[in-house]
Image (tube, rainbow, N blue to C red; front, side, top):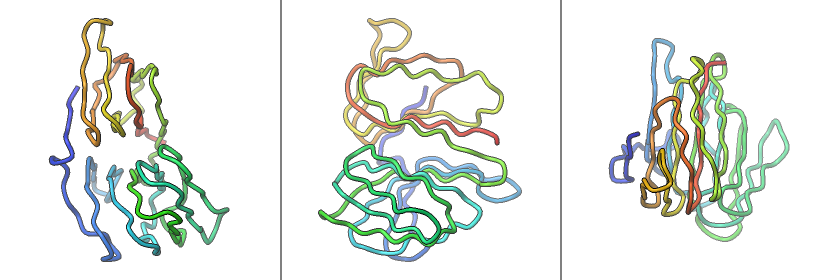
Length: 188
């Protein structure tokens, strides 16, 4: 298990030039981006960048009440932390903030051969990683200070808010305090 802190994330400008993202993990191959996990602050209403060929899962981390207006599907309303929206990266999407700035977690996967399973986790919660060969990556984003029991109830690990844990395969971990997001990236 590897733990990354927010200061370890790579700062990247948004494609639309209106902000920046903190890139947590990314996998590229000969066909381009296979998947990317990043965190960003949205401080004003605006159109999301076009990520044609990618599917997006967006998780509200902090702040309240953001609506995503999509051109090709029903609006996504994110009222509270850990609410989730899923939409095509090429769908013109406008974010409207109703109560100030928010922070979000963005998981993007290539449509043709990759999918994401994203689960909001509130303690207590058992996290079981997979031995399935179709799993490319598994990790947990700590939305709050989180404590995990590892292997035995007596062995614990505490991670700070905005930290990311990359899991090894075939691991069972219990989230005993806090909340966050469990992410599995899989072959389609």
